[in-house]
Length: 317
Image 1 (spheres, rainbow, N blue to C red):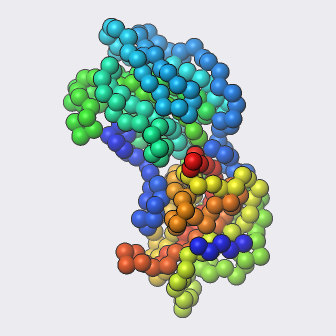
Image 2: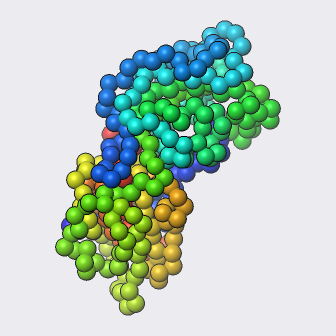
Image 3: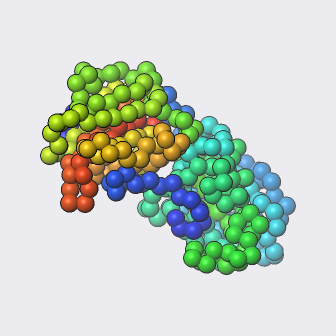
């Protein structure tokens, strides 16, 4: 099957760029994520010993916070506003969320509810502020969660001036948990190899569901047109335009290795959009393994990318 064609709230943002190619759910067979289709149900605060803001809006809508009078708690506050029906977030998961962050009774610092990409990061590993690690591990995918974080679990007395965060302030966040994937999540090990997989160039090796490798044979002509070849087809939902969670590895046409998520130890997000390098993934079933070939431009050499399609955080409107 061939188809031609953060802000400072998170110190380490794992939105990955592949070859500077616009790289930035629905579960695939062999992948593990949450079912966000379950009807959310209200939940009592998980732990709270102080005043909490009131939050308007349902899961998927931009929230608005109204802060009470009084001093915020000096401990972490977590309130599950609506509980999802998905898998429970575990430490080490690759997590995708929509988030609004605001200084207590102050300025909004960030929102991904305004048409920007969801935020992605590894949770429970120190890649984000401690308050996030503590609050989000253990929550079901599909939940909307209110979290207030004291300075001791955020940016302390010094704050984060580059991000507009003063020192010694409490921060409030509303999270919509869109998807959670184990760091070793892969494609479908039972995907069906296609007839084209045997003779495809470049050469792709590696067990389905595991690590893939890729090499360009000597003398192989450089591509002049982009192409997408399905190497093994699964039975998951078709990929749509939006944010795709994937494992991948890529090389330049001279076999210079590029980044591999199997080496870095966590999936990443690829942006699937019309005219982009991953546009040809549209319609391919989640769980599949795919070879993407892109020709050289003035800014980068020709390259080949092997992608295991794991899940989708969102779809473009």
